[in-house]
Image (cartoon, rainbow, N blue to C red; front, side, top):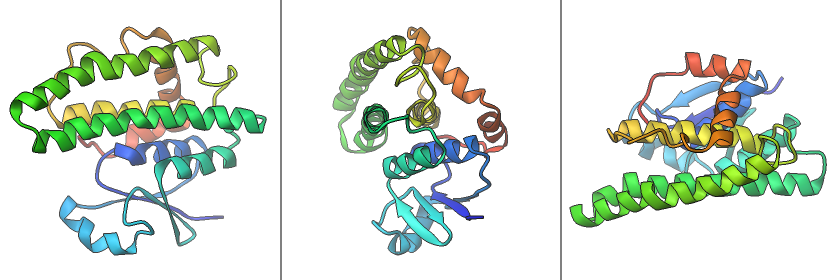
Length: 215
């Protein structure tokens, strides 16, 4: 049996999707987390592209969240029943991933490089325009596909979506951001999908046992 090791910071971030998918399939894995960000420089040279998350399989390291999740999705029969379905699934996941990139850029990066005035402007735009605009598109797609992103059945894109919102909620908590309302409150189909994925038995077990972290 193969051995799996997820390598990342001590938060959900871009690694939680990998953890969710491994958990979904009932795969035991080593959840290796840097004790602090100060540890990163000593590990960076051993990472294939100098970035994390990394999934190590039988001692070989593989990089990039989307690439890893696409591999796991196919391995765990969550990649659709045709090449075109697989394309739709990967496309949905890629657009969801774009959202966490934007959230991370604003809440992590821009906060430390923008003036207070410009940060407030970007912050307002993020929560008043960017996130709602993306969620409206996702809601229409999920509504059209009977509660899922593609063809009315669970795929790795659905698990990816739920995990990314776990990470976004975590980032907001880490940055002490008090949300005026739940980000998914006005999106009935997305809220149902998010809860459905979280309540999958193996994923629910992971959520219950994972370390308590902010971010």
